[in-house]
Amino acid sequence: MSELSPLVRSFVSHFGEMGSRWGINRTVGQMYALIFVSPRPVNADEIAEALEFSRSNVSMGLKELQAWRLVRLLHVPGDRREYFEAPSDAWEIFRTLAEERRRREIEPTLSMLRSALLEAPTTEEDRIAQQRMKGMHDLIELMSTWFDDVQRLDHKTLSQLMKMGSKVQRVLAFAGKMKLVPGGKASA
Image: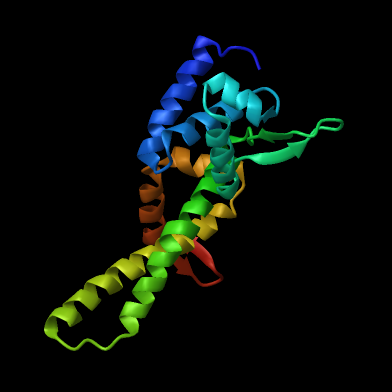
């Protein structure tokens, strides 16, 4: 891998800084950015050299990226080294990140809330706390169901939905004004 261009170096640096805000360490963020923009699969030695990281730091980072399912391991015929590539499709990356965050953060929270809601409140404070936890549980459950529905949409449909933005509210308001008449047809 040759020296990084100013464009790539800027992207890699920024991604490292953003990664630290998203809950991954800066080094892992930079490694992911480099793999993502690389036109071909790269090996750990190339990553270490390009980013001036220790080989052990790169190995740990690659394990983390694999655990997040953000990079794929490849073998090149005739080469014993392991190579890594990232999906180039931004939608695939977004879906993978959303699924992983859900598995790591949302599901444990739902599990805890379900357990807490099964307990019988012994004080007025516990009853109020459970009411609030129920509200949180119901919202997270609703969002999880919505997430499942969205995950099943194809990229084109999902993109159209996102571009609609607040227009969705007008469509829902219009649909709410529609009445069904005999024969299953809608009328205003």
